[in-house]
Image (cartoon, rainbow, N blue to C red; front, side, top):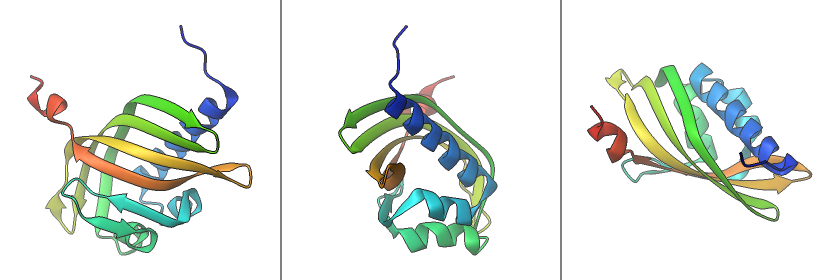
Length: 132
């Protein structure tokens, strides 16, 4: 069994906090987790600034009923970390079905001793979609 460092444990905690905030649509909690220059890349290639990412929830456009993250892999590079994971969700975006299985890459940076998300890239998880 692989051991994890204290930094890796904190990063896994960050993923849990982020997942809980996404599930709850808690834009205030999300805002606290994102850097000021956060950029998210969605599964269809669109870019969203921090403000646009948060507005999905503050406007009520996105409603999530299930948000699960697993298979998290952490790679540390000093005060920067890259996390790759699998994610599934049940949600709507402006009333349209947004359910899916995805892979994502999170970029986290340590600012003033605290890990925050600087970037996120989401892509469809073809392997999960092909599973019976």
